[in-house]
Image 1 (cartoon, helix red, strand yellow):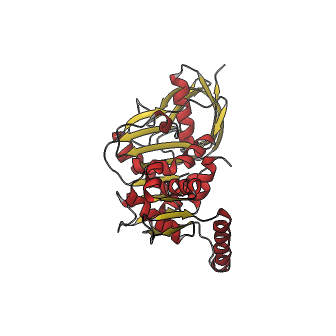
Image 2: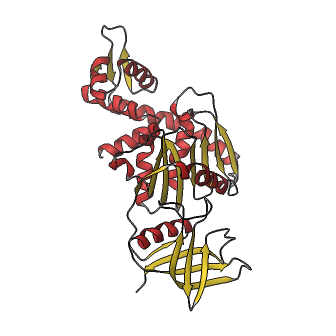
Image 3: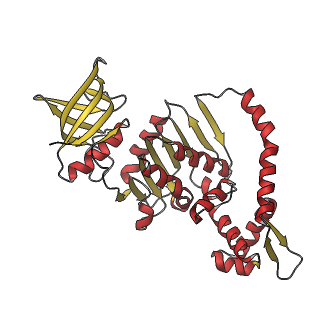
Length: 348
């Protein structure tokens, strides 16, 4: 198992990135003083004492605070794993009882105060996304979501990322999303996945383990588009673009229309003529429609320079058999065609 996978597994047990650093440092030393761990892990001695107490409570280490200086010892991994397995098995009856007693609901709304729980929800939503992620996070939280965001982008999800509280990111960090912007001001943490589920957390909640604020976690198909509209309308336009991914290899198909517009923009700016196969319906009367056309214009607000007239406007202008049509995604009302799926190809 490589180092990144090991770290990801440890984080699944609720350890933060710094707690993982501290624990792995202890494993390599067997036993060490707080000063030694602080130097190697790049944290303060005070932080080491705090983390060591947490790791001791969870059964990962023992702390000899009667010794001078205080010595922290990593427990044998077999003992740690056995204890984790016992804890998991002990939870099984209660979890099973709750699962069989409560019917799952497609429409859920939660108010959550725990930072750990909110982060778990965010990671879960990112990992399960199929089509699109719209995410805004403070810069100090970005590292904790790095792995999940990269995996989402690599499996073909449109990842639209806004990082607040900074004016720049390093090149390696910007590679985690399809398009990334930064904003120097602090803003709420927001996430929507596939327009269906999401999280809204107030400023500061995820930066502190002791915040008295609460986050909203939702799974409501009518609320998702509202949060997306707020993201693109209130925050995205004021942020500064720092990276855009390379276009996907053609031909490529998308059920998420905004992703199709994103790719059409990238290829159009590369001076590639595009054709599109559209499966959808007429916006006026809902009549089923299949159309192959040539893309003549793209209207979008994802990539600079933008040219849409309002924040959520993303559309294609196409031409077929001498007729011009405008194409929008789900719920299109200004366009003539509402698309369920688009397939982009180089126009030969």
